[in-house]
Image (cartoon, rainbow, N blue to C red; front, side, top):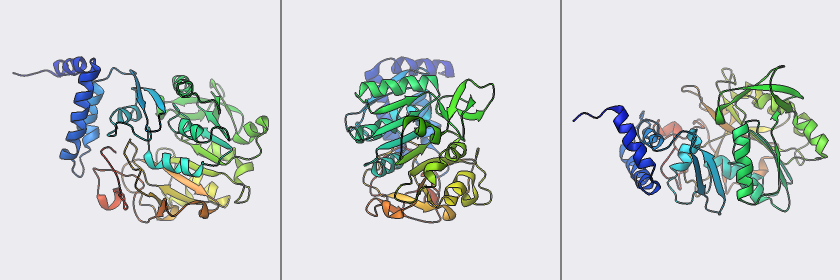
Length: 357
């Protein structure tokens, strides 16, 4: 008997409409993944992920609880939401990007002021705010209306009050922006007729009376360079006072054809006296609690492959990088991937990893 694609989709929709049945099938998919793993074949993207997608209505609300009790809600509208749903651990310790999350929490542990540009639903900001509650404030910037609403929901659900929520974008000056793309992949561009107000970090801090910023996290799909240009008053400070910076680079927006050190945001930070490293991570939800955070010096990153992006870490004082947590490596890719050559894409210190990636 031949089953049409429509009939199969309807069958999966029926299963997905029953939470208990959906959970049983999701558990089976996670058990299947390691059985099918092979180089040049992404099991999550080509097999189990599409089945998970078929079990969910587009933009369907989802909610999961993390290991520390944090409750996080999202819309099923991105790879972030899908891989959060498919987290192998019943109580994961993060939403997205395990090693980036761990690095942010480690380096922001004593922060008084944290700036998060591209806060999305609060996947990093909520955890940072919980950590520094009673001592510090997280200043979130998220111009996406639906993401902004989810950010507010996740703050309220966890009783978090030490977050300043801004619906503005970050740029090098006060201007207006427009966005291209949707959800977590919306890319900003300066636009005189744009509907999104933007402000620089320097001006925002001046308006709020913020004298020092300890940590800046930027994930704004190509707007990182302009946002960093707008933070020069803080980036130019000496090592004890300059913020730690975590930011994304992507070959769709950043020209690294002359090497990563010459790429716009990296070159800017180096000019300000920063040491800059690529942060090796899964763009997924993967258990990494027992594994060191691997950092690659900017001039020793393996960059081959299709268009891709990854996070980077910049510090003026490398002594901030606790050797018990951070390990320096060289000549490998920042992208941790299970379906590519392990010589470039597998953790070099894989004390603990689980399905995903």
